[in-house]
Image (cartoon, rainbow, N blue to C red; front, side):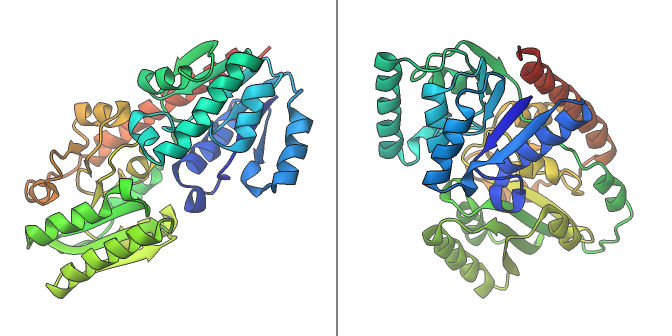
Length: 345
């Protein structure tokens, strides 16, 4: 039995990429016949969280934590008796991520390191990360028994490729689409500012689909959108749309995805929207985007020159993307199941 603890739930509409990961992992485990249980600790009050901790800290099987900073995860790291305590930080320990709310995170990590040094901690900690750098950063604070480098579990919606093939967009101008949490690291404003500085006749419409989080940054993005709108650009901001709703909004347009994040541990938005008729443009690099770029299926923008990237737009080869992504998803999902289930005793 694998017990999966999530601090964001399983609905990507509210929990973003980590929720997508938990949902995809549960599906992959079910297909492979592995028993598992998902517990959403974000729904727990502090009192219920303590009750859950006292119930599960003595569990000897595999425990999977999808955050290292959540209070429940910290308790489990310190006291769990699991023979296989697996932590998937989903980018929390990337250097750029540690710079966000740095003072608070550094305080937590110093306390954690002190407690684990002088009072011990769970002795069977395995970290499953998307990069060696993140695993190395984590190991500075917690003694790690084993490290596994595996990309996030993928569900690739191949059926969208087939539906898109029959869409009837006639306007050759581009519908620029950006999707993500409304936080500064997602970079929406820098794209809008670049378009304001470099007006583009190639753009028909800009759609920003977001999950509300940072009100101050949302106000900045709205101001940047208003500047573009005053110059005749059609800019639309929509909150809380699901992947299926975004697909229906965009299917009959000549859409192109821009992912202007400063960093990402993976790229669920990218996976969900590879059906678009133009190659996506991203401003961050990780193992996944490097793989896609190497296959010729995405473009990495340099120095935030998004307008220039739009001017040199390239059409996507959706059939080739479909084949590559089905292979990629099968390989990553199989490896993840092997890592999680191969360690269980």
